[in-house]
Image 1: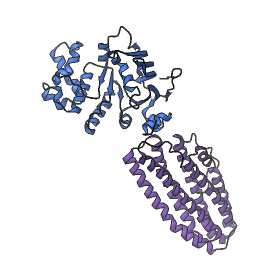
Image 2: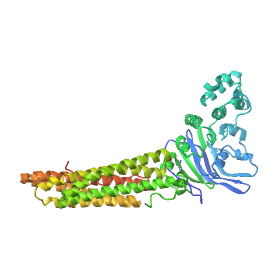
Image 3: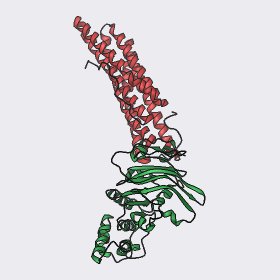
Image 4: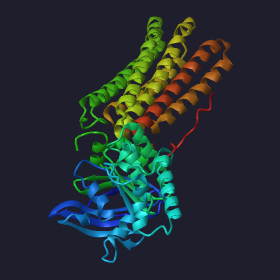
Length: 271
Length: 235
C-alpha cells in the first residue's frame, strides 16, 4: 500500500503493516462547497477488514471525506467532488454507478441514531425489500434475525419486533441502525461519530460491535474522541484544514506521530 | 527543563504537572549523583563521617522515587497521556528506578569506607577513584542529556560504557595479582573489588538512562546493539 502525496500536498505516510489489502482507494480527492475548499487532494487507502479512524479538529474535512465514499455529497447542491475514489477498482463517481446501489454497498451510521418511524422488524427489512434480497417471508425473517444478531441486539428485541424502533434506548437505536446497514450486505461501513450521543456503557457496546464487524467489513469511523480512535482502529488518518496531514497504523500515530500538528492535536495542545 | 515538553497544553494544569515531574526527576538525579560523588570522596579521603552521611542520605533518594512514582500513576490515571507526554511519564518511571539503584550502590560504597580505614592506604585506592570519576562523569552527562533533551549526548554516554568495563577488568586483574602476592592485601583488596563492581553497575545504570533519554527525545530505541568491547570478565 505504498502511497505518495500529490504535488503540493504534504501528507506523511507511515509504512503500512503487511497483510492489509486496500478496499477503498482515494487519489487526490478534493471537495468544494460553493467554491470553498473543504477537502484538499486526499490520497489514502482504506484497508479491508479493519477499522480506519479519521480524526482532526472541527471543520478539518474528516466528515466531508467520509461522505465522499458513498457519494453523500451528491445531495448537497453546491458541492463539487474531484479526484478518484475506487472501491475494489470500481470508480465511485462514475455516471454508471447508481448511488442507491452504492449506498447499499457502503452503509452509513450517523451521530444521532435515525431509525425509521417503523417497527424494529421493518427497520431491518426495508433495505432487503427494496433491493430484492429476499424472495420469501422466511428469507426476510432470516435476514432480520441474522442482522440483529450481528449487531448484538437480537437478545434484547427478539420478543418485541413489532414495536417501533424509536421505542428503544439510544444505544439500542444505534445498534438497530447498524443492523439495518448490515442487512443489505454492505462491504464498507461508514460511521460519523457513532457514539457521541451515547453513555459509556452503550459506547463500549458499540465499540465491541465495531471490533466484531471488522472481521467482515472495511470500517471508516469519524470520531472526536482520541481514546476511541486509539481503542477501536487499526489505521488513523489525521486531517487538518481540509488536508490529510498524516496517515498510518494507529499505534504509530498515537505513540510517535511524525507531524507536529498531529502531535499537538492528539496531546491536546494548540495547533 | 526546556525540552521535551514544548507547547503548553490547552489544559494548563497538565503541562504544569509534566514539567514538575521532569523537574523532580532531574532533582532526584542530582541527589543520586551527589551521593556517588560524596561516597567516592569519602573513600579517597578516608573520611568516615562523610561516608556515614552518605548512608543516611540514601533514604532521601528512596523517598523521592516513591513520591515521583505516585505522581506518575496519578498522571496516567487522570490525564491518559499519549505520544510525547506518555514518553515523558514512562521515561520518568524508568529513570527513577535506575536512580534508586544508583543511590543504593553509592550507599554500598560508603559502607566499606570505615573497614578500609582500618588497614593502611593502598595504591589501588587511587585507581578505584579514577574509575569512579569516569563513572560519575557518565552519570552527570546522561542526567544533563535528560534535562536538556539531547539525544546525541545520551548516545555518547551509551557508547562509552565500554571504557568503564575495561577499567573494571584491568582493576580486577591488578587486585587479584596483589592479593595473591600479599595476603595482607586480601581484606582491603576484597572491599576495593566490591567498590569497583558497584561503580561498574552505576555505569550500567547510566547506560540504561541513556537509552531511556534517547527514547524520550526521539520516540525510537537506540538503533543497534552497542559494538561491544570486552564484557566485564570479572563477576
